[in-house]
Amino acid sequence: MNPQLSGAIAVPLALIIVTLGYALACWVWPFKSCRKCDGTGKKRSPSRRAFRLCRRCAGTGRRLRAGRWIYNRLSGIRRDAR
Image 1 (spheres, rainbow, N blue to C red):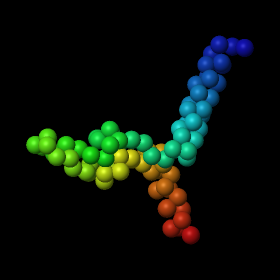
Image 2 (image 1 turned 90 degrees about the vertical axis):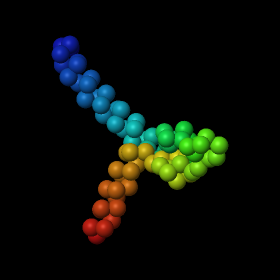
Image 3 (image 1 turned 60 degrees about the horizontal axis):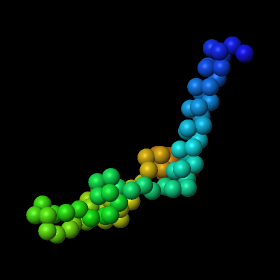
Image 4 (image 1 turned 60 degrees about the vertical axis):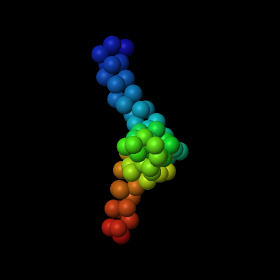
């Protein structure tokens, strides 16, 4: 088999595998840890004495993955079109 042909087949195949893997991860684990509060849901106040709820995750410590957010948005558009 020609090495150039092998490379031309391997790159799209790898992209398809990575995309399907990420889609599966978004389906199984739709949430990820919030990067702002490291998944605790709390941030220190400016005085460093008290805790406040994280504004980005609303104190849950979890954020919706980008792929799941896109899926939810597209399914909502499709549902509204009916």
